[in-house]
Length: 129
Image (cartoon, rainbow, N blue to C red; front, side):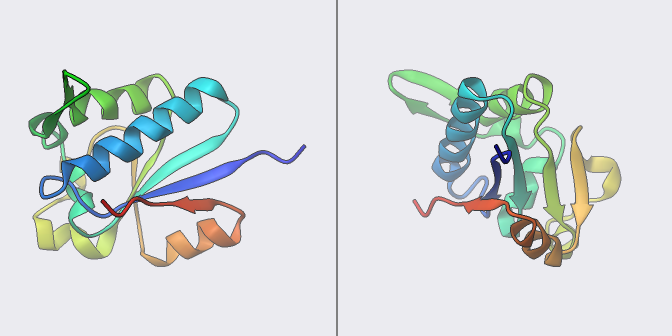
């Protein structure tokens, strides 16, 4: 059976934390149910901020009566599930991000890499909340 492959596209961070939290919760659930799937994130637009050290720790909201911190979710995805975060190089300078600022498991890529991932069979997943 062919391996299932997904690419989660995140375009917001601080301005719309529900997008990051929603996608990360879905990703963690998917990996928890089937760790054999390939699942990574492509950060574009304001979403590139999630790859900058410390930023994800400042993003939180209450869900189901509990405080959810994006930084904790990011660490779980990286440490427990070895998820990669591809960051769109075109948006890095707009948000003052350098290579030295990036969290573990982050790779800098051109926007065309997202198209390559989809041509390689990755199923794109995005939330518009």
